[in-house]
Structures are given as C-alpha cells and as structure tokens.
Image 1 (tube, helix red, strand yellow):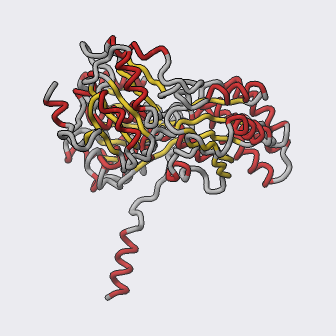
Image 2 (cartoon, rainbow, N blue to C red):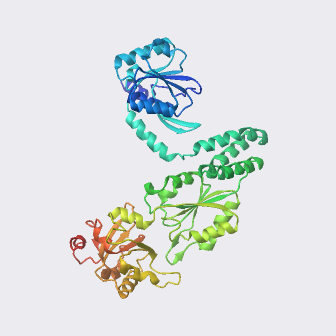
Image 3 (cartoon, rainbow, N blue to C red):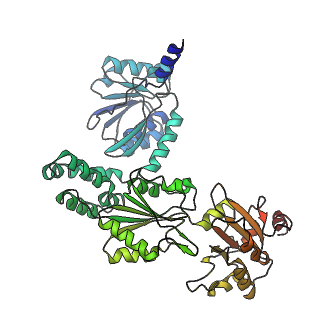
Length: 486
C-alpha cells in the first residue's frame, strides 16, 4: 500500500502535457468564431507572425476591431471542414459546444492540432498565458485546470522581466557568428556570453541605449570577453525585503561584489548571488568602521578589476546616502555607474502609519533633513519652514531630538504640534511613538529605542493611524488622544 501511495504521489507531480512551441511564421492559423472568445484568440495570435484567418458568417464589433488591428483575414461564411486543410493550428471559439466539436473533428481529420476555448476535454493542446519578449517567449499553462492561476503567474513574470529583453536577445544573435569566430574555446565562449548577458552590454540594452550596447558588445568580443567594471548605487529601501525594487533584485543577482551598509538587513544582502563577494562597510553614529574615502576607493578598485559592483545602501542612495561623493569618485576614475532608487524611510513610515506627508489645506510641502548639518549644528536655516505648514521629517534624530524641538519652538512652532517617532520603519519590529513637540526631548533618554529612527513633525500627524502607537512620555495618556483632540 505504501508503495502504491508513493507511486500515486509521484504521478501527480508529472505533467499531463509536453510544452512545445509551434512554428507559425508565414503559416495559416484558423479561428472559427464570431464573438469575444474569438477576439481574445486573435489578439493573442497577433503577437506572432502567423497568417490569421477568422471564419464566421457575421462577427461582433470587438472581433472586427481585433481583426483590423492584427491585419487578419475575415472569411464571411460558416466554417467548412476543408478550412482546416493546410492550417498549422485551428481554434474553435464559437461559444457553442456542438459547433466547437465540429471544428475540432474537422481539424483532426486534416491532421491539424485543435483547441476549443474553455473546453479542455475537446482540446489537442492548451493555449498558455504568454509572456512576450520576442524573440524570447515564456508560456505558462495549468493544463486547463486553473487558467486564472496561470494568468496570475504571467503577471508576476511580466513584472520580473525587463521590457527590452527581446532587444538584448536580438543583439546577442547578431554577435553569435563573431563570438564563434574570435573566441577559441567553449569555456571562453561561455564566459563571454555570461558577461554579455549580465554586464554593461545588457545594462545599456535594457536601458534602451542600443548604440552603446552594440559598442560594448564589439569591444567585449574583440578583447576575448574581458570587460570593464561597472557600479550600481542601489537603494535597499527601509528594510522590508519585499519593498526592494525589481531592478535592485535583478542587479543583486548579477553582481560580482556587493558593498553594503550596516543598516541593510542580512536578508536583503542574501538576495545576491551565492558566489558574490560581500564587503561590509557599515557606519554607525560615532563609529565609522570604514571611512567614506575608503568606500570610494573600494568601489573604484573593484570596478577596475572588471567586476560588476552593487553599492547597496539603506533607503534611497540620493537621500542622506552620500551618493554624491561616490559618484564623483567614479567619474574621476572613469568608471561607469548608474543609480537605482529605493524607498526612503519617510515614505515607508508614512505608508505604515497611513500618514499623508502632504495634505490639502494642511501641508503642501515636506522637508527631509537630518538633525544636524555637516558642522554638527542642530537644524540649519530651514527650521522656520515648519511654521508655514511644512511637514518635517528628521532622519537619524534620536540623540538630537531635544535640540530639534527647542530650535523649532524657538522659531515659533507651538509645543503642542503633533509628532510621530517611527523606529525600524516597514520592518517586522517597527514601533511608533506619538506625542507633541514639547515631548520630543524625552526621546534621547529612551534606552528601549535602538533602531534607526525617523521623526515626523507637523499637523499631518493628526491624520495618521496612531491607535497602536505608544506615548513618547510613558506616563501620559495613550497616543490615540492626540487624534481625538484634533
């Protein structure tokens, strides 16, 4: 019995279909039908180079539009058995099972595979959900058991694959002969194609710059697959792995080396290739394990070795990420680079708390700032902006919270102005404290707050979801009274 059960389980994991791609270019594909089902097949077939023939005495307007857009042929009469002769595929989409069966049987007599829309028991083949990156194609099928699931899977794959992937594939095809002629050994050719599809050639092609991509490909094939390095300054977002952009995730999989900050979670760093080198350059307040100058040197040195480098930064590289200094160093060294944005802490915190950073009639602008400037002065000249309805988001502000509050009050902001303090925005251990500007001085003394902190100050805080927030000063009433008082 155990053996029988094991065999049955194994059989369930085997496919009932064999995936294959039909050659349809320049060949006739027949669609028998007059309505929406037929229109859907014509739209799908229009993504190929097939010669599409639609057979129906009368057709509905939606199918008429699909035929016109696809450049298909409409034969205005009822389907006949001989219509299947010479076709490569036949689709029965009449909406009537008896009529569909007649079409399928005619196709089988002619030796042509047939598909009947929404009638898996009549089908010789199933129509997959298609991801088109011509000449690349990905087909997803549930063998007729779960077409909605197949469509969901298609949507996820569509999001993962760059739109210009087909252009990269066509470029590769144009260099196939040169690679075979100029690169001697199979191993060297494998290395060449690995660099082609994951290095600067692919980067420029996927960005739409085919001239530069072709130039890089020519240089690559003529230097026996040796390539110049490239650096991506990538925003890791606030910490939650699923807030990483798709582009950032793809680049992590392509990087030879990942240079990452202390605040980037291990789970995000782990998204890189297993064999990629990891270089930690973590910086904590008052304890820089690696100086910024040394970080700049690391990026240049690694790229000069011909490596693909991801400089992984918490949040967004261009917001308090010192990306400007790194870009200057790369420019001076003649290293190519690009920037991949990430979700910054203020945006992540606002989303978690349902806190509108701008709100009509309340706040029309926002200031993103650190608690001190380059000279360690607490709050530079923008402090007065808060008086004009500006929302203020202060990064890395725990230790200077009291000085921030004092400076804002000194500039005329009322001590009762609502404040939200978010620790570890977007992460599973996120916490929120709420209170007023006068309470903010208590933050520095709170030993239970050890993660990265963002402070949001302004009237928009009254509109946030603060029911679960703790008070800044524990002895006070729950934070929900802040909302009730508004």
